Length: 133
Image (cartoon, rainbow, N blue to C red; front, side, top):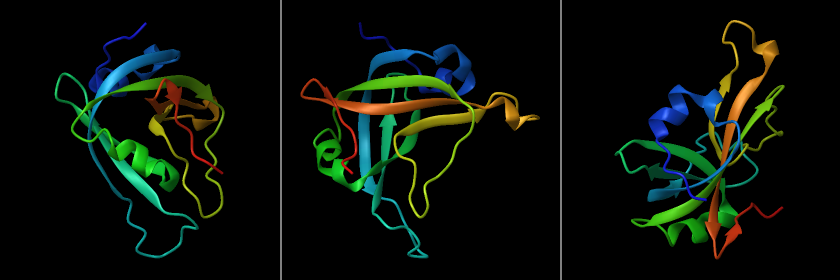
């Protein structure tokens, strides 16, 4: 079942979306993620999406998905959202965590309570797209 989801609601009420959701967003752009210090071991791209209400947001993808996402620029695309509660967020050495739409502490005053995270994956040819390793 496909749900209509507002990016604004996702950001303001993240804890209400701790489940799997299939939805549609428009892919606005796919552009290189700058690395001015040349610190990262890989190239990454920033994807901008827009919901039906005009709200926009960005997330990072790996370079292996760039071509697939670019096919949808200017188009409505199907996405799989995975809302989870995680104990911590650990970034791999000289790499970025990809496909995170939202990550926020359960309680900004006490990060030991963990984080609410919504991951986002493009559904292309009825398959969830994942970074190749």
